[in-house]
Image (cartoon, rainbow, N blue to C red; front, side):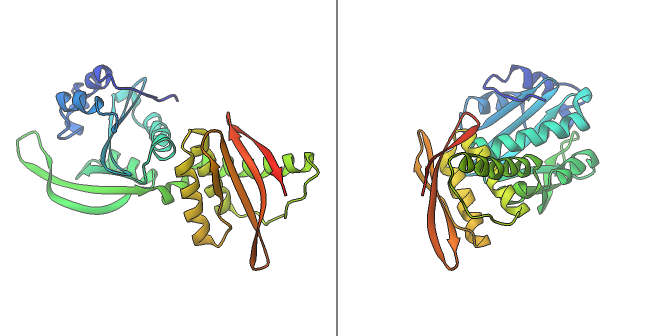
Length: 259
């Protein structure tokens, strides 16, 4: 599955105009979609059978609309949604994604729940119907923190980070404290690794440090954005000691200083 960002609404407008798609997209009109894609603050992602548009409601908050042809629904759309959420959370300032599920749309509700969305509130007259009236719609949301706890790539990237760090420090003859394997730590580190790889180092550092403060882990310091350099530390009893400086680039890492 490959999603690509676009500012050209031609393909997504053709999907939106499909008779099986048009009734499911609610108030989003083709001319509004065209105009929205001209705003660099919004995010449109397309794949072979459809895509998504994330309307930026406020700093860090995006409303996601999905548009998929019949042949792109089911498992294909779910996998695309996973990739789309990963894009928003790692490549943008996104801290929360919201979506609207009209009453009776079991497929949309099921997909939202699979992705981890939960109900925020219900509007009794929030979804336009074909007869001109309005029906109920559930507004659902997914936070960055919850996404991190569910995304499989966060876990695997976090495991990679810790194994790679051990490997590199051993090659340098540098001893770092061995810590117990904590799945939640792997996920937090893995989310940050993806953000660093996406060129989003400020958010990566802030996101990891927020988790670390809650978990009682040492925080990291972003020494440089370009190139990305991170100062790490560890806990020795009740005191925090600076440990090493690492660089992140091209999907890999290097140890620049081991104290």
